[in-house]
Image 1: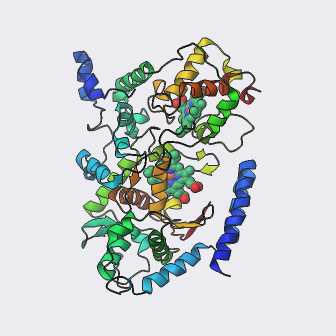
Image 2: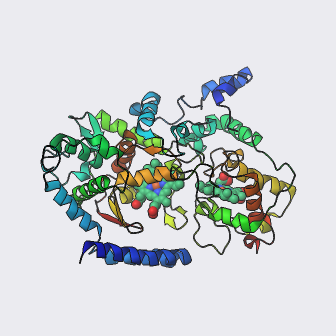
Length: 269
Length: 223
């Protein structure tokens, strides 16, 4: 089937589901579960995964090179299993990086593409869509593997600590922090269940399911976009794409999720 | 009006209270109770904040600056009350928030519950994609069950179903409910509930309408 037809269909199914969701609480959660089951064999995210693989292998940029020699932490050219061990410290950039910020590094180094324009491009732009597709491909190459993030190096440990601290940092006109919405077990906003992120179970479920296809918008979102939208709901200013705050939070979630099974690409409301 | 930062405030305190503050400092920039680890010291943390965000629309960098309440409540050991040493500070923060409440000038507590219901339903406002000066929603259904007719309610806060019916309409109830919506931290320093009036999220008229939603005997909440 043509990809846009699949996505259009999925969006139509969800539009119906949303109406149901507002009308009938338990029933709607149940039908979303059924919907997820039904899509398990044909998650539209797989199209983005395929697109990402194509982008990975296609020569591009001023250097007309592919990303195939990108070092995601397990050595140049190793994609399998890399996502399960990110974020991690990279010597060449002297930074702790997640999948998305590391992709920027590889695009810059291998392809000669200026990453600052990619950082600035808004979510939903073709540039960001490509990064999301690439991240989806990379994450899919760790599917069914256990999350294994290291805190052995001091910089990695520091990122975790910083992530924990920002998780509880309140500000803005609503006094919100991440913990306001994700700091207790079993809470919801309206009908949306909120994972309790400081726990292995909550972080495990959340961290291992992004990048995810969001049925409500028909978009593929990486963790960077997920976090930016939660900061928006938090009434905070916008986090810079790939900035330390986003990597610190990712490190906090990923290390807490250690041992959970990677299940990307995910599918979400 | 925002609270004065505790550091300014401390200057005006008697010596014994000052000693207490030094024993358990809670203002921004000072170590709290939770040990965040060597990698997350104040300087590194604040440099990270500064370098990781940018202004977007009305959501500017100034929103990262904390008042005394936010600084205190960003330490989970203090927010939860597990840190007994900060009990006095906690009480002081509640007192300051209570003192900041603006009571209805004309003594009129209740507005129109139908408008209140719309405000409670509305979760919009003050994000980086909202316009300056737009009317804000109350976000109430995001966290509370209120009218039984609305099934899509959140559970971060307690159910407010039958609120007026169970509490009656005494002056005490009116004052508490107004105060809670205006500044929830007056009664519970680190409540997860926003300070609608104090932070200028809600107008006095909007608070009146929300009061009616909770307390008017005609409101579906009390049917």
